[in-house]
Image (cartoon, rainbow over all chains, first blue to last red; front, side):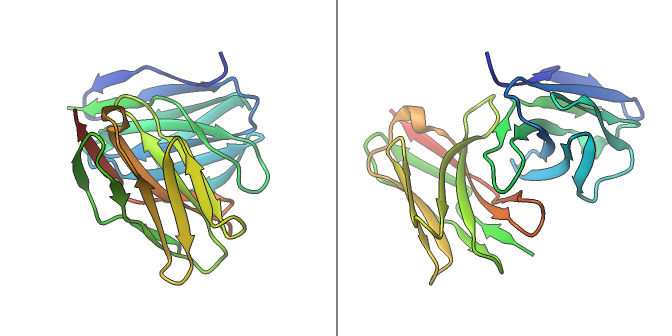
Length: 113
Length: 113
């Protein structure tokens, strides 16, 4: 099956903990993205990666960092979570070059207590 | 910078009703405009795309027409079904920012059987 896969589906943690979310795509794309979707469904891009290089980095807190081992994987690490980090984190991928359709994973829902 | 406005936060219809979701945009470039649909528990998926070259997109019974004069990109469907219940996002491709997507705030559609 070709798609974008994310793990875990849900994660509940305490303020100050470190968390890491995984994303893998089997679509053969070479650009991947992380989006944050808040409780009001608002979608904001956080990062995008192309050939292991960060090409778009919105103004996100430094505690967030993307990690890529190859073009099929882009993980997201949050060093010390805050309550405002509670959201759904969506991973997406696309081809590179001009506008290309972005394919999204199902998301990871983070709850920070 | 680019922006997208969806004023309707929630729409409730009955099956076979006509759907109209309003979207306006602001950009300094020739726009590529998208509608994404997000079903419960899933990531967004592309519903249709419109550019200045084709002016209209049609997919799965949904239709959107780009109007440069009013800078609008409304989504329509003649007869909705319960399975159309989802959140619909209008989005703009920012060609000056690495083709990143700027999403509207989303319109939640609930179709009663």
